[in-house]
Image (cartoon, rainbow, N blue to C red):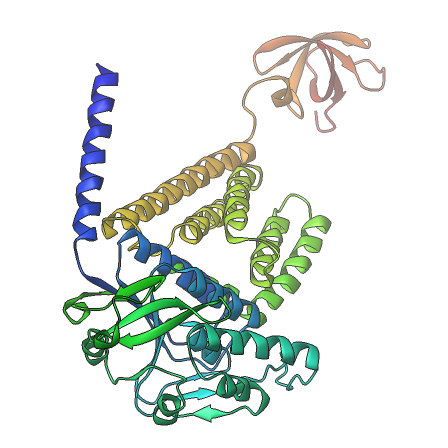
Length: 458
């Protein structure tokens, strides 16, 4: 019966997902992704998630609205590689009016399938600099970046000479000059106008005289049916497309914070300090806080991947919760719950990732609620255990220590006494004699014999 119900459930889910997938496949979607800050590994993670999301929804076009002063070279190169391998055409739109895509932003623009700028925007100034802002003039690095820029200009049929000048001369261009010199394909001041213009064009992949693949942005009227194009992507009807605004997950905000150089450097220093303090003060558990900060700093430095870091965070969270029983102060359980919640948000991408956007939010809420319940439960148990430890023992031989009794059989030095209503064999501590009826105090125990001394005030 259970197997039958399970089979019916799986079959129903298959039909549902097939229906939803077909529905999305038949629709006309354009995904809008906004990049409005420095380009970091957080940007890289967000764009990778956005592209995967676009593939799952069968989106026709991705528009990246770009407004950035530049960013990390490694992340810029990774994003360029994402664009190169994307099956969905990507428009980089320097937007809004007056925005800029300097340095790393221009590299990303050059890697796009279609480059667009809004009025008053600026691109250029692509010479690399060090972390302190000093320009890099070593030919080894400059030539590598020039080749990267020029090769992408060639791949997308753009002006290779201007692409080189972006780096060697720190050239800057406005939209009109960029269009004039064939660096961009269109000028548009909003997404609606951009899509209306795109509907008159197609993106084709052809082969140049050297046998290399080259993308060309051509009017629909100039597409020659007899030409042997490798690929044709028509944008007819794109002006009627349904716009989807990509919403980054909370992991993007967390990673943006963690990838701040000041933040991960401070985390590393403070974390190491807390570990040393924890070693010198065993039993408090502060070294686990230090380990957490060091782990977060490793994420920022890029030494630990996000998935591995999430697994470590979950393990650390469980360790903190277990350590709560040891300390009974309540803070460790809350810290452990925080680690588990943080790992949950790092693992799960945008809340739009699943077919139903509410599903991922339900998963997150469940994880948060579960973590809070676990943390509260362990905190309560730790509190009760600590309270029990502080209570005086009410049973067993330990309770007899420091108790008072009366001699009922002369101690010479062994005899019997009455302690707490019970008869015990007893022996004097110093071998002296204590008469019947005198009061004694229990100072120790040897097996079944209590060691006593005569009370001074007796």
